[in-house]
Length: 303
Image (tube, rainbow, N blue to C red; front, side, top):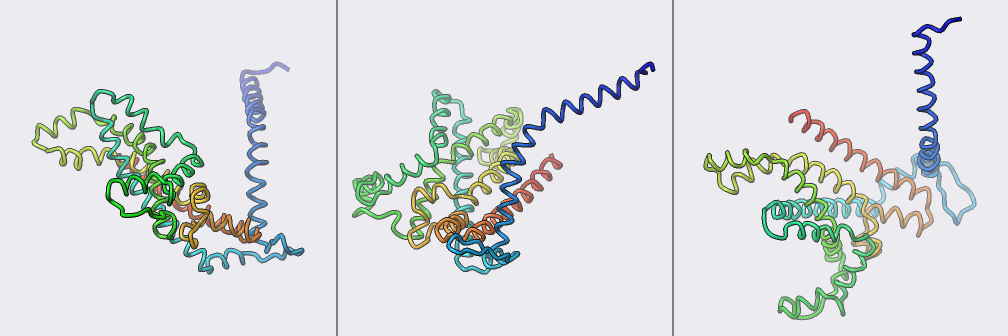
């Protein structure tokens, strides 16, 4: 039987689909094996009262989730996490914008300064945390030496010795590391502003502040939204710098929800409850992502 052009076209389409499936199959197997299966197993674990010191594993449904929400320790950790998220994100945004505006100016050595600014961000979080622990050291730290020698402090101080102060010092270390990332994102956005727009504003008599407020800042809205999306979600999940610098102390003063989930699972050995806490954190981050993507969508539609 003679094959018509329609038959040949359909055959080519089927072989193309088969080839596409063959190419995607390894990625699908890896994704299913490394992501979907562990996620499903963690969710199943969160529905049980799993304690390594107990022999039985009773099914409790969403009991672990209800207990976590009712737990005062979890709510306090959530409040600390929100404080860390809001303060660190705002500081990084303001400082990053200032650095981006500086790096956007035309001056000698600008390229070198742009490269040097990236150094804090390039450091691994572990190195950053250890470095700031030494800077804050109550006996040998550089911060105490600097402030006492300049007369700003009478005596050395334990910067990580009280809950509120320790949280702010950890925030400072996080801001130092992540501000360059914010600056680079905003700098890229700044360089898309047409020079004619700023020139027209100057001709109309707008001063430097008016040009920034009415031209530059509205133009930076997409970049600012991207920064808020990235930094809010990352700050809400903060764990590594807390673990390195304070282990959640003193007196749980720097214990965030991610660290609280870690201690429930690996210190108290309550794996079911730790899994439930992890899913609550993931749910909160997911809600933030949806909110921000809606804002980005509205921004794109309005552009």
